[in-house]
Length: 334
Image (cartoon, rainbow, N blue to C red; front, side):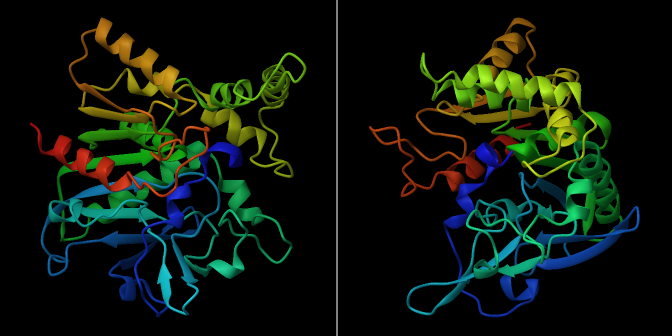
């Protein structure tokens, strides 16, 4: 959903480069084929450790057709790129090879000036690519990503004794279902997701802005009924297709509560999904599920930015690297 899952953090923390190959940005580029589609994969390894055998850390990208490498030119003419992993992956690369997968039929490297204001990619028709829309589905991403994991674990420099899958926002749902579907996953990081599904987040978002004369929440229920009643509709003229929204609205709690592996759940207390993560946290406490760890970041929103006194997002304070460091410390625990 465009309205609440854009990774705003992409517009912060940059590095200066001027070339057009992933290697120029300290990244390795791999390709594999999944159901006839060419899949672009970027891997971040510690410099000098590219061939050293380490376990894989797969980060599942969030929503929308946003290229992994976005080039920009600042006011002084200096070129750079936005963060590929949202967070700085350097500390995690000490122990892992980090991988991220590009969205289907979206160019891997694009200049910002060729993208929409929200950094999404549109083709020559001014719309999201048709082949992207056809594949922008939960089950496609889960099956594709499992195929990529198998491809990477066949590389001599990837150890198969551990496998960490992480995801933020839409990517958290993908990561949760991968962990549920693929027994080789040894740890899951579920970040900024809603364990009760996308539709309830859509409703909560509208509740925050409604009044007795502007009943946005009730309107959201009407929209949700339309999606549910026509859940196989692949028309994307108004954003995500009904089918995509419906698949991402199947509560991830269905996958999460069945997991026996260690799971870390991170979320901001000002995120619309916070009450649902709090609810799930209580349920896991009641069940005495020691394999779940919850980390709530107080006063921050969906992408871990704090809110100002007037309720606006304070983009000057970037907390993503702190969150990633907490992930790393959790991964070190037995």
